[in-house]
Image 1 (cartoon, rainbow, N blue to C red):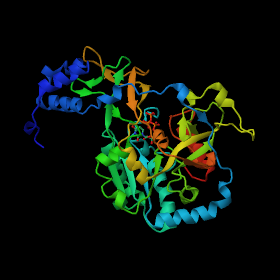
Image 2 (cartoon, rainbow, N blue to C red; image 1 turned 45 degrees about the horizontal axis):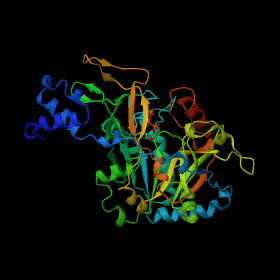
Image 3 (tube, helix red, strand yellow; image 1 turned 45 degrees about the vertical axis):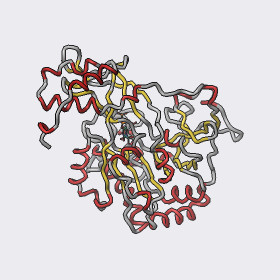
Amino acid sequence: MNNMSQSINLNSVKELVKQHGQEHLLKYANELSYDELLKLTMQINEIDWSIFAKNEKAEASSFFIEPIHVPSDMKENEESHRTIGLNAIREGKLCLLLLAGGQGTRLGFDKPKGAFNMGITKDLFIFQLLMEHTMDVVRLAGNFIHMYIMVSDINYGDTITFFKEHNYFGYDPEYLHFFVQELNPATDFDGRILMSSKSSLALSPNGNGGWFSSMHRAGLLDGIFDSSLEWINVFAVDNVLQRIADPVFLGATIESGKMCGAKVVKKAAPNEKVGAICLQNGKPHIIEYYELSDDMMYTKNDNGDLAYGFGVILNYLFPINRLKETLNMKMPHHIVKKAIPYIDENGTLIDPTEPNGLKYETLALDLIHKMDDCLVFPVEREKEFAPVKNSSGVDSVDTARELLVKNGYEL
Ligand code: UTP
């Protein structure tokens, strides 16, 4: 599109930033070229200002947290669950959603996280592992499964190119649907929006909770409600042992009659930094590790197990029809302290190593709370949970490699 055909209404943008106390965003407006100013004003016009409003917090006393039932007999019906799940997949009732829009800042890898090579003597990329896990089920079911892949403006080009270069790792590209999530501006600790250059806000992906509304915006939901699809399996890019489209999980969730399903693992320690599944006012809920009081952290149930002893691994099954209702619901914003590159008052780019500001994100786990009930589906940690969050230490490339080897992979 010829940019000159788009006009800049600088006065209205000035009014907008004034209204929100963010006049500094136009500090360099006079120095910018037409295209730069156009880009900046477009970014400002696209800001969702509601993210800065305080989440309406209900009184803490109005929350009643209690343990949720975690079935211990899932293995007993494994074969019948597998049959139910496989039949549902063959009938086209399942689609998949890969959350790959994150920036993976902790890993410190400048490409999409899925392009990270877990191999040592050969290539074994994270995307490759995920597609191979999915192909296992495709082969069993005898048909491909539609997979939606959420990326951000920041990693879109690199992700598509990577998939193309690797021939989609053997997956039928007709069944892969990439879409872009929205970005949110980051602020300093006082709520002033940071800028990454004189002509750009410091933008970052708006969290993994907005995937359904991003799919909606991308036009991917058109027709989905009238199709055979009933379930969507949502999973993170960074668990290299992630079992995707697991027919047993799907069959068990269908059979349970519950509204959704969540895979969980037994916590490695009471204070492990994972979200624990529980009930809040009778609804499924994920309580963050920092929200668990010491008392709750160590509470045991009648069997002597930790009452809040199961953590989620970002692998959920959601019913598509119910998600439709969530489109009009507001998701709470989580404010996360991060190190955010920004330009200082002299226009010099600073790349901090310590958190200097706030990012505003919605989280997929909050969708669980919008469901009436949930099948909690425990899986073996060593077989299904190898997250790659950090370059070394806990949940790192090293620990994930170790687990891959334990599961028979050659690296
Ligand atoms: P994380 O919470 O680990 O975030 O994402 P991240 O951005 O990948 O990594 P850090 O915190 O910067 O190190 C969990 C999952 O959610 C996806 C990620 O790609 C990963 O699969 N995600 C996260 C998104 O799709 N979009 C986002 O905005 C954030």
